[in-house]
Image 1 (cartoon, rainbow, N blue to C red):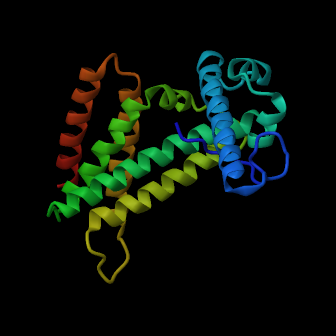
Image 2 (image 1 turned 60 degrees about the horizontal axis):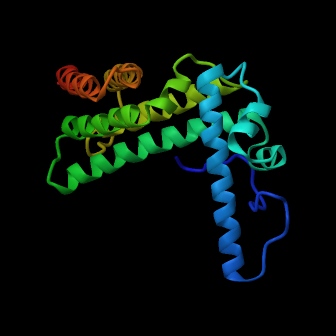
Length: 221
C-alpha cells in the first residue's frame, strides 16, 4: 500500500519543524511514511468492517495506534482517508496497465487490440491482488463528491483507451464509433474488476481474467 495523502506541508506527523541535517530529515520522512501507512491500513479495515458511513475516526485511531491529531494532519478526516485509499488503488491499476502495454511494445507487439488487452489483463490482476481495497468501492459509498471523482476518472480512462485502440494517432479526431467501442470495452473491464475482487480464490479470478480478455478481443475485432 502506498501512503497517499491529501494534506500537504510538514509531514513529520506532529507538526514540528524540519529536523537539522539530511539524516534527521530522512528519519522524519520515514516516520511520516510509517504513520500514513498505519492510518491507511487501519482505515481500510474499518471501512471494510463498517462501511464508510458507519466508520468512526475513533476506531481508526485505535486500530492504527496513531494519534487523532496525526490523522487530521495527514488526511484531514475520514473523507481524506477514503480518497487516499481510492487514489492509491487506482494509481496502482493505471501504473500496472501502462507498464504492461510498454512491455508488450518493447517485445515487438504493435497491434492496438493486443496492446489494449495486455493493459486490461494487468489492470484486472491488480483487482485480484488488491481485492480487499477494491471491495471497499463496490457499493458506491463514500464522502460527498466521490461519485464525481469516479466519473471523472472513468472519462479519463475511456479517453486513454480510445487513443490506445486507435493506434498511432491519425490526423482526424476519434469518431463516434471509436468512442462507443472504447466506452463498451472500458465498461466491460470495470464490471469484470468487480467480479474478480469478489472471486472465491485465485483460480477463479484467473479464469475470469482469461475469459474477459477473450471477450475483449472478440468485441474489439
